[in-house]
Length: 354
Ligand code: FES
Ligand SMILES: [Fe+2]
Picture: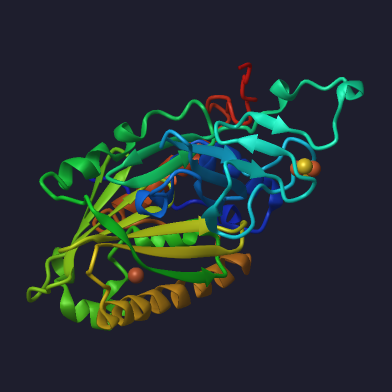
């Protein structure tokens, strides 16, 4: 029996259409778990980290009891930001940078500056809007939509593969950012196949046995395995992807989290977060190899984006041997964007009554 090579997504889905982007934010990014930070960045009460993912500004703070809490970083007065910069430590409240409304670390509005009885205003109705927050192996994830199933279910295929591996005691050893002029899907698809390795990455191709490069889909996780031609002290030849934009590159010691963060429909930022045990640094050689491979990927996906935008290409076909994970990803995109997808519960207001 023959199986037909699946058709690709249409080129129009990679364009700069703001309506399409709004739909993807709601149907894909609000309804999925997004890597946010590592627990080592929030070790003591009152520490916070702020980040904007797919246009959702979020702040995560450790409260006075030591619990992590996540909120939309959007003041309920007139949408000001509660933080300035990527991280910090507050004085027991998150205070809006615009007019000074102050929120307790559980999200309750404590002070609406210069509001009084004549304003007929109930602060209990204006608590910060929470986001879902869960952790896995010290990695903090957030989800905007209430209906997202637990993170443990999403990550189970990777957890099964990592059994026995200890990731306790890691900390952020290095961070690298790369910004690309392409739609996020073009980059994700590139990450999901090794078909391009011999042409795009000649040096990497010399290190790994591309003929035995394997990508296995397990639920919404793709596991890549590429045997090394000779053993390497750092690189393990195992990396994973989780819908929609998380990469986990596993090293002999520690890992690198790759967040493929869309900045809009036409730009994507790669955040490489190296998590290593205390005292272990990322070697300049590892960094240089990673930068070289990344620049090769960036160059090709930016060229692909120009060609998608040219309006000539409509759809192509995917290799059954090499691009099963791309086909799976595209099926997830189609499913999420279909009109039958369940209603989002994004933006439900917190019921803060105490
Ligand atoms: S917008 Fe936050 S206090 Fe005005
Ligand atoms: Fe690549």
